[in-house]
Structure formats: C-alpha cells, structure tokens
Amino acid sequence: MENKLFELMSKMYSEMKQGFSSVDKRFESVEKRLDNIENDIQGLKKDVVRLENDLKPKVEAALDGYKQHTDILERIETEVIRTRRNNYETYKVIE
Image 1 (cartoon, one colour):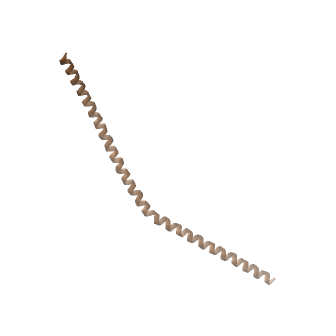
Image 2 (cartoon, helix red, strand yellow):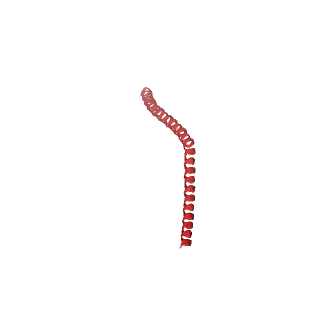
Image 3 (tube, one colour):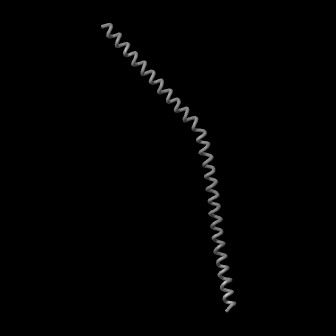
C-alpha cells in the first residue's frame, strides 16, 4: 500500500513539475514580450521628444510669420481706407 501511495505521489509530483515547467515557459514568453513592449515605448518616447524639439521652433516661426502677415494686411487696409477718404474729400471739394 505504501508503495502504491509513493508511486502515486511520485507520479503527481512529476505531472506537477511538468505543468510548472510549461507555466514557466509561458511566463518567460510573456516577460520577453513585455521587454519588447518596454523597449518600443522607450523608442517612441525618444521619437516624441525629438519631434517636439524639431517642430516647436518651426511652428513658432510659422505663427510669427502669420502674425506679421496679418499686421501688414491691417496696415494696407488702413492705408486704403485713408486714401479713399482723401480721394472722396478731394472729389467733394472739386464739385
């Protein structure tokens, strides 16, 4: 009886050991995948920082150019209005 119990326990231990071995392999696979994901994330973070550093001055320059363009248009509009008023007043005086 003790011999059968020992064999049964040995068999159970062997099966459990094989089961844990397959679980260990799966965890190793998951760990490798997580490491790859972490590396990808680090690479993406570096890319985002590089893009921010590269694009920020360009965007600021574009916005400055837009503002300067708007200022010039406003000055032209003001001059056109002033010229029209002067022409209108000159026309009134001539009549």
